[in-house]
Image (tube, rainbow, N blue to C red; front, top):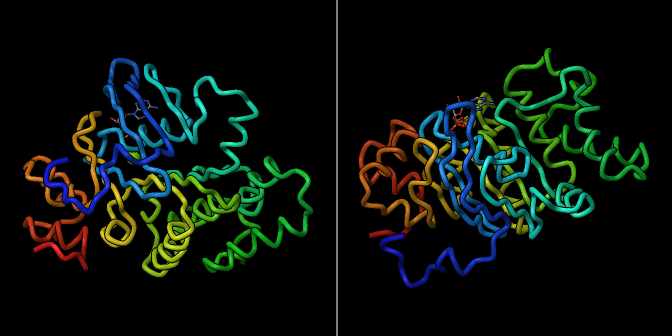
Length: 278
Ligand code: ADP
Ligand code: MG
């Protein structure tokens, strides 16, 4: 949090979309998350960065209420995600989307049925032709409508990721979790994804993501959370993090954001290509 300029709002004054308190997660004798506390700002985009295996996906699943931690508190959109009432939990999920690192599609269902599932669950009264139109509208935006009758096993990794992305959008969420959404996706697919995410951001959607994509980071990130070995290393606005003097934080950012970022100046460029920093 060092080097904060007077024009920036301190993270602590901002209302959170997700509040995590003292989260620990243990996988057998391995501690994947160690006492992590963070408040993800409402209506903002926070990107989680850190080396492979440091616990990014685990943190994202805990923040989405999909993985109950061994210790700690999870509050999502004001609802206690561990002890919340089923009605409040369902309402919270209705407004949430999740793109899984491995796409997380149901293998025994067609892509169409995968995308229909959230709508059928949360809006059972919605007419079949309306559901169909919504699914085709999203698939068409990504040039995927012809593959909707197929099953996930026949697709490329990039196509699976795009379908997972479309499925996450289908409920028009105001809280979005993105676990390496652009991995395996070609440039055109990434461009289309970015255009959707820019719209979501402009509409006030809260986003929490994991990515190595420098474009996605520079275009979307408001806040960055840096992790190492299951611990929160640093959390702050993009420019606070870009200006961090902590050599370990700088090294993690350089690694994560590409070999291109070898020098301090490169990291600033990647995070804020249009920033007026000097
Ligand atoms: P990241 O997303 O940062 O690469 P993960 O959150 O996926 O890391 O995993 C953190 C650590 O926890 C890794 O060492 C991983 O092998 C381990 N891990 C993740 N999920 C499980 C699981 N279900 N069972 C056992 N170990 C797991
Ligand atoms: Mg991961």
